[in-house]
Length: 300
Ligand SMILES: *[C@@H]1O[C@H](CO)[C@@H](O)[C@H](O)[C@H]1NC(C)=O
Ligand SMILES: *[C@@H]1O[C@H](CO)[C@@H](O)[C@H](O)[C@H]1NC(C)=O
Image (cartoon, rainbow, N blue to C red; front, side):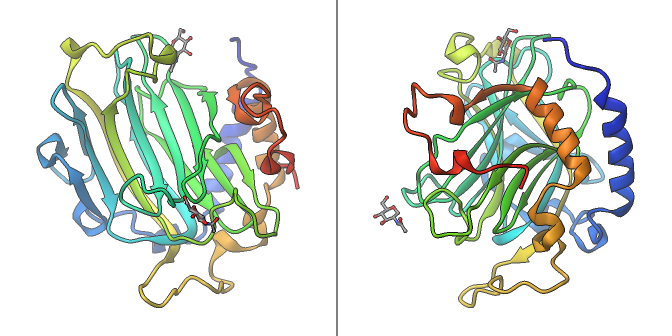
């Protein structure tokens, strides 16, 4: 697909503007904390490495196993951001997942916000898949192309989560807007605090061209890299739920963060026109009845 070139300078300019002003309290985040301050390894400690200065983290996948980590803390609402550089070369079948989930497992009542990077053959484009689970029910996939090669450099991938909307953001461009409707419903996760996770694993039964492209283990190990984790969010404290009320300090749950800004709307319109590969809301074979959340406008 030939992308329109014109929005890119606008994006860069917006990104530059925003870097100066938003998020306002980046310094209060944990951006310079060490891995151990924020995370635990979930499995395969020996498939995890850091750079000498501890600032870059590497997860690797080989025929034996993948690897994953999770935050020590849970949060309810916030801005969660990290820079990733994905497995380069021939990475067909390999999935790097970066997600938030209310539990450390695939329990039947979990809430989850997913970003999955689906690897590909050398030179073929990665896809980014997002999904939202509420109380164990997902099936809300979208797939997008990216406007850059995510294996060449670090790019930031972020989730904004409050009670009005969930944004999936790539380098400050919102690629997906998931709105609440202000009522009790079974599509918008807003009650359970979530951990942030990342992992790398083999998914060659489905990931690349619908499972037709298999992982080439001769190319292993497959390594994805991470840096600059930051969170501006409400840390959950058991047993007392500290995140029930918001103060004016929580910029991620203020009016400006409940709607797209004008510049975000421009970027989002460009994404919608150019980068969407799959949208479950438009998949009438799979969902003959319009789903409740699909009638909500991202522009409100
Ligand atoms: C969540 O899902 C479980 C079963 O998976 C169900 O029993 C329960 O009623 C659901 N809770 C809500 C609030 O819908
Ligand atoms: C991989 O590349 C093929 C061929 O360009 C493309 O059809 C496919 O969408 C790409 N991504 C995935 C995840 O299959």
